[in-house]
Length: 134
Image 1 (cartoon, helix red, strand yellow):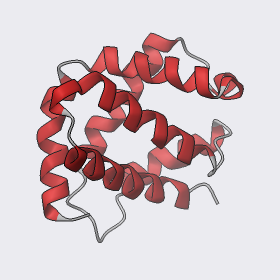
Image 2 (image 1 turned 90 degrees about the vertical axis):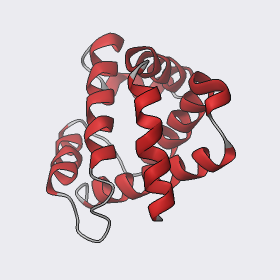
Image 3 (image 1 turned 180 degrees about the vertical axis):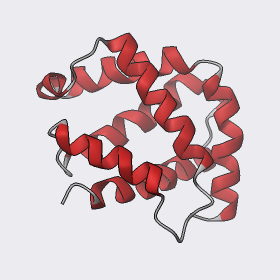
């Protein structure tokens, strides 16, 4: 990630944080509409899962400057996902749905530049997590 992309993602987090529960729930609705087969990977209700997602995202956004060094906290989250039966190929659909949801929920605040920055951030975080699934 470039420094500019990191700055954009971190600045946008303020806007996202203000609507985090709504964004998290909308994400899971869209994910399960897109891939109903993934619903069985989750043992908690949509509201609780949304809270977990947004907490993990908040942590990940603060770790974006550690680009060259794998982050132990993010890797630990990835390791937990092994127990949840998450497969590496799920990360692509998860990312697509996340980016779509952020774009829809942020409205005019969402720009092409911000979208590219979030794609880069998601790819970076997902790569760290997927390394632990092997």
